[in-house]
Length: 360
Image (tube, rainbow, N blue to C red; front, side):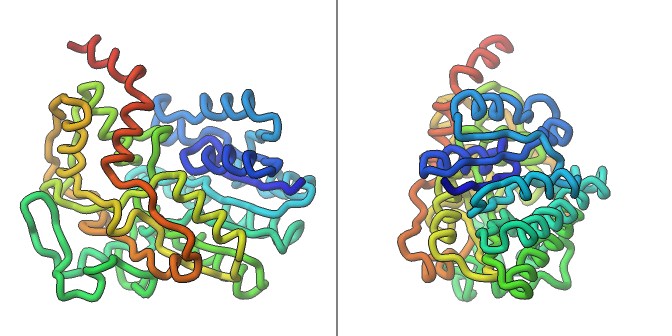
């Protein structure tokens, strides 16, 4: 039976990988030491998800290892039999948190990735290595695109080459401000590419937009749609940071993300790079997302505008999915923003609605 290693196994993407890989016949080793609790507090802890995976999936083995620990990572990989697939989804994911503790941010995102790559090269060099990168590797360069202000969103000038389908991976990652988080992820991204090109390993960087789903433990600093829907359902105030709430994000369901991983694994390449998000099929501004949350919950969202935008934050991002779909034509975006938000709401309503009732 083949083995898969998944880092960040208790997180949104990691847990979806674990469940799907087990369903497809893999033995799965998951690494997660619940750093998300340290980053964002108890509400963002992954421990409940980890416990559920351990309890319900006998093919899953959990290791509470820190990917910064080189020896621990090497021991896990040296003991993995028939290792065929590595998905690296563990990360420190927040701009703002990175600035509060740059050493931890870089250690997790960059050094941790290096440890995983080297362990894979030493013990399973033919295993597919999937890295969950980020569109923040482009820094704030997208903010130089010619944008037009519409009633509920910013939109790219229709004459621009990116307007029809979104931003592709030909955009430079240089001469821009990334945030410290963006830099640590870019360092990891480049190293994953280099292990593919230099050593001939089958590696891929998926530069994600907003990735989401019903089990996302959203927090103010990370997890846009999940956190917004939680605020809508519970009555907790929501803060919009800058741009009048008209900044645009594309949003991709975690199941569609994992489907992309598996498509690549079925026909891997060395040193591949793709932008991955909802594309033109699934995107919204913050204002539009607030409106959809109000439509779905039947409740008014309490929100306020903080005029100062987050440093390095994108004003408009939609991923061009054509390069990936050209190589893997069977893959597609299967859910739009409204469907994703309804699934988030329905999955969590029993837990969230009593919070609003208690506050009323």
